[in-house]
Length: 283
Ligand SMILES: C[S@@+](CC[C@H](N)C(=O)[O-])C[C@H]1O[C@@H](n2cnc3c(N)ncnc32)[C@H](O)[C@@H]1O
Image (cartoon, rainbow, N blue to C red; front, side):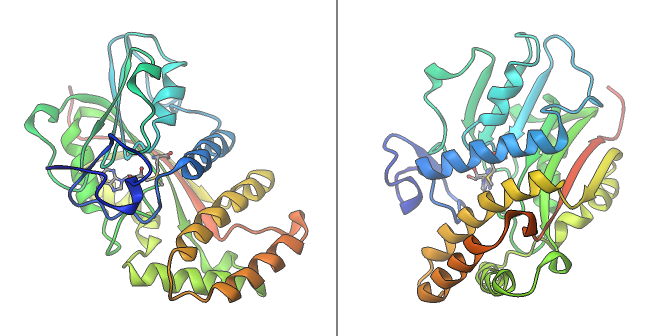
């Protein structure tokens, strides 16, 4: 069932729809759009691709982006593939979608709850499914429902491309960052968000019958790391700020300390995941 503007995340976005089951914690407003745009470019700097060179591009192929947010990945990809390639972005909420009239003719954005079984019309339709940054969406440390949806949407023998981040306590520096991380960890625990599962995505996919053909994980390169740090802190502060149980004064103090630190001293407490895998079977 579609609901219209029923919660704070869509309040300032009239005529948008959100499916039942949405429990995304970030408010979908223009500041969030901007953060997602920056984050997209940061990922391009990191991986140096939009669609991995491991994935062959053919005329008329169909590509899905799951949890598409504001559709920046489908939009950017449309500039790099033939116009016969159809790119469909899906999200549980349309609140971040740009107006359809502003999209290229081969990009469509639509509603889908990727954590429940998709409609029969989407079974085995796609040559590529792209998944990015579900770390903050998956609850209970269990991405199986998402992996099932990806397998459902893909044709046999076709490709998943996944980018994500996993928090890594070993990368956290002592001092204000540690304080910040402790507060953020407590916040995430309240919502049963634990990004540990991201480390195990390759095994999860192999268990589901995928063949992993590209897998890199590790800290981000220094300059990218500094850019991502700002992006990460802005998102974390927005969710923490909306949470009354986190002491706002303590957070303000931490932010002040963070801003005083030298940029070459910045350490993002995340490892990256960039992966391409192929579903079982032949076409
Ligand atoms: C961090 S954003 C990432 C957006 C995009 N993938 C990107 O990299 O720019 C996560 C997105 O997942 C969407 N989402 C959350 N739960 C979902 C669900 N069950 N099904 C589909 N999308 C969902 C949110 O609405 C949000 O747009």
